[in-house]
Length: 116
Image (cartoon, rainbow, N blue to C red; front, side):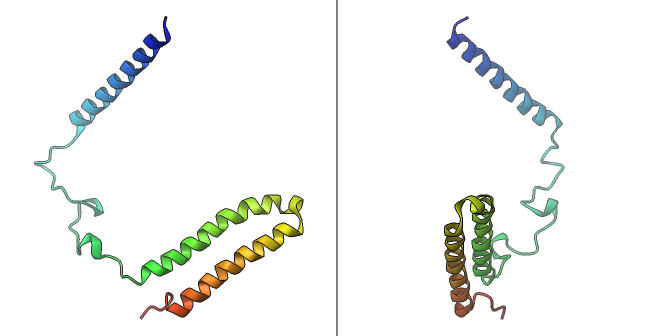
């Protein structure tokens, strides 16, 4: 059997499976006439507009959280190699943490942590 024929057979089986799953979904789905379609909250009526749910003061705090979350992405691999790299790795990590602390001090000074 040629390699091209094998690719077409696999492609045909994949397309048939996708079509069968689509038809199965259509067969077991509930009609839109019987269910009211709402965008979120499990079919409950929204109390407010979807774009106005969060106050703007959450966004700077979220950015600070993401900075420290990304910090942990760097610290876990660093903890595995710090013993073989020696004091240079420790100095690099303290420089990295110093930059993050400087960012927190700046965010604090700018009022990112104020709630009122």
